[in-house]
Image (cartoon, rainbow, N blue to C red; front, side, top):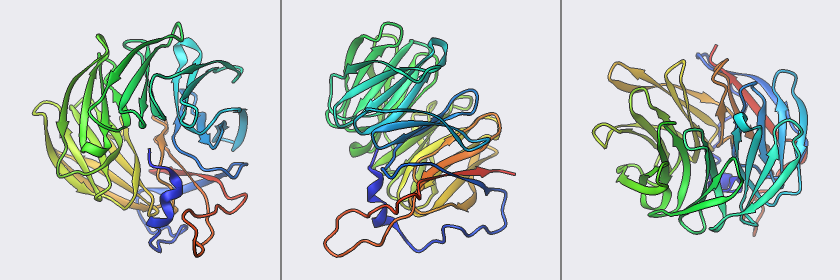
Length: 333
């Protein structure tokens, strides 16, 4: 995933707190300690959030805004995958190319496993195969770990730089290939690349979401569009406009809506409209809120971000204002 310190290039003067009339609104701002940058976050079946934050993962209960625990001594956290059936979590650390395996009850690290590629970014637990897939941005590959034994069992070459991924839980894993503007399909049974497709006119896809009930994949792309890929026809069926600097995508199975979280401070809501899709709403969030996850039970959306100082002369990256790391909670009602 593109590092969130790139967001200053995307700041476009959108108010961080504007809330015009609409179906969606920010209902809470959860302030979280720490001043490091972030990447992915995910929610468990209880609605607890696992948030990447520099060299740690913080576990947060959004109901009372409490930090339930912290997993530390990591090195550049990207993503978190949860295997609740095994009481395990898996964290990808990009700088040391490791996966930290932790106990979901105690939040203690059980062991660290060296991946077979460089800079593991997105990470996915596939319950069908009982495998964990890391997507290694520095080596265009996926390392496969047996979730029961914690052993590396395969390395899958990919056609380019992988980004976010999804599983159909029936034997197929799909992943965006950012630098080739493609979607690749991995066979979770034989652990091999099965097929890949172009998603033109989409360019540089990052976030990926899916509605497997209708056979649709939603890729959010850096040329300001979301592509809707039809797995039946193996073609891009539609494209929809989204905001600038998207990084995360999600699909709400109950509401049948797809989301794109955009660094310009917007959340694009896409709804099914018969056999087609339409942009239902563009929700103002806060600049830098580029990643997200959805609680499938209450349909709330969570987006981490922070406030930044203006980019000074000679600086390449923005400086974060201390004490401003926040998770926005957005409700559809």
